[in-house]
Image 1 (cartoon, helix red, strand yellow):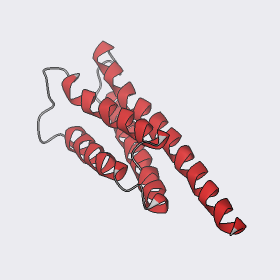
Image 2 (cartoon, helix red, strand yellow):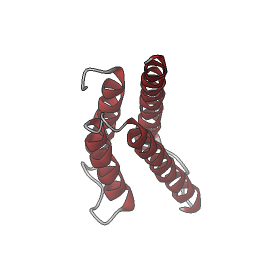
Image 3 (cartoon, helix red, strand yellow):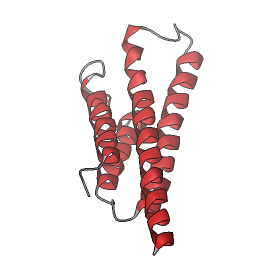
Image 4 (cartoon, helix red, strand yellow):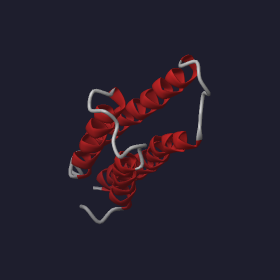
Length: 127
């Protein structure tokens, strides 16, 4: 059922992740960068996860993995910023809030999926 609220949350996270590509300095990162390919993979899996609405448990597991992947990319960027020797952050690094925004919306989607799962379980008990 694509009209559920968790679909909207995941779609917002996909759109936020997609804006990451266009807000990078110079258009795009170099293709060999782990950030670029990491965000491409996470965005693709998150988009495909929207259509797994029949498998709520799998959706929640995949969302947890994606939240961990987003967090790993942010932590990797922070580590790189502090070990580069220059200024740790600049105005262009504000784009690293995009994965954080995506984490928030994926977490909201997970809580909505969990509410749906609890509702289905409660209805099954009544039968």
